[in-house]
Image (cartoon, rainbow, N blue to C red; front, side, top):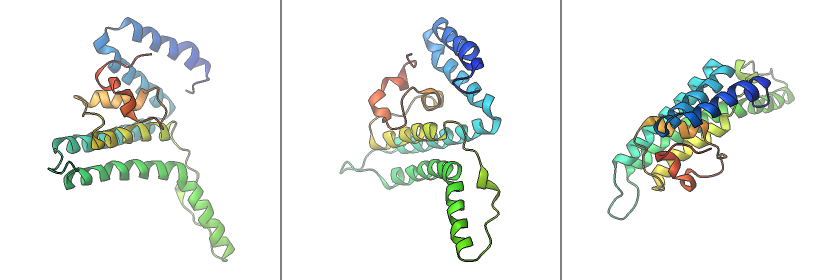
Length: 189
């Protein structure tokens, strides 16, 4: 399903909007999270798992970061710095493998053919990137970075962090710290 399809515009979107406004406040984020995953799931099942892995790694890293207090000098501890690593590695690795692997392989092939060698026969050469991979990768990763920088506190439940990464109206460029209420209140539409 894509945003401009008839099924999205005249079936999915009206159901989501109606459900959102009819549900009590405490269920709104959970409902949006479920709808967001259904939307990604309708495209490809395995794409939803990629999103869940990214969000899960980021929440676990943020949890580890938030357990340590700043050092006496007001600096991040070594454990906090180390905990940020997996978030950056996993997210940038997913992004690079889906969005840029084909580009790099094609350029390596041009160099190899120019040198008189055989092209690479890599199966991931023509991988279609998951829908919104840049968006939710940067949304999820920015949460961990903002917890690391002390801009936002760790969300009380993984569901809140998950819903903000999967259905946030912000663009990936805007830092999560500019929209702090999203972690503790229902997403407003």
